[in-house]
Image 1 (cartoon, rainbow, N blue to C red):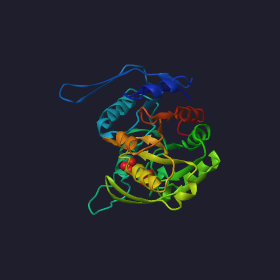
Image 2: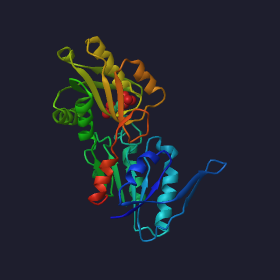
Image 3: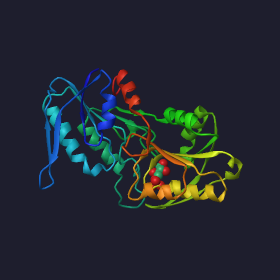
Image 4: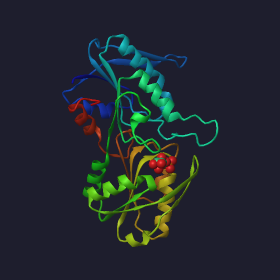
Length: 296
Ligand code: R5P
């Protein structure tokens, strides 16, 4: 299936890789702000009768969401056959329950919003925790791609005597799978979140892996507190400085600098969110998915 690809600002590098694939044709659009801060959207390519895809990774989502809505609605008004969202990072997956009375469960509300605007969604490793499948909250086909084999490859090819460290009990399944594919051992931490910027982490049996390179793997690095707490335990246990790998490097505020200051050998992220730490290219996963039908 051929798609007209419209690219939101910040996704240009990623889009260049997609556009190498014959299934994608570059669509021209103008996005800008009026002086009063309102969004202006113009689609300049023919979309009538065509499948349209918008590439818009969704970190800092509140800044993008309205323009995304205007663009999706406009594509439909102009006669697009289908409108798909390619969001390598999908936002609003973490508040998946009301932790305190009166809180909005934004994962569900955001899913309803996108399901109303798009015909399909493709994303990479969304933070599925209390929800186990996207279909629990998305009413459109929502295709999930996994960075796991790419991370395992990176570890195999770049890291000497790795041992993989997972941040919490829920990570065990995917950390174990990465360790299996990379041919190394793994440990899983016990983590307690005390607030937005505070987590308590404990690391059993770290001494066993003193001669190894610890590789911290997490789906999201946001404040980096989870990784920093873990690194402190690794230091106490006398291990080597770790390599930190995140699928989605959000790096809120000073997180990148804080993590560097914590004493790491290297920080590596995938390119779902553009950042200087990007070292794992996941664009091929989307291209592969395209081959099988974008949301099929
Ligand atoms: C949470 O369950 C996730 O898997 C990550 O551990 C978390 O999002 C990391 O956040 P932060 O970098 O703010 O500690």
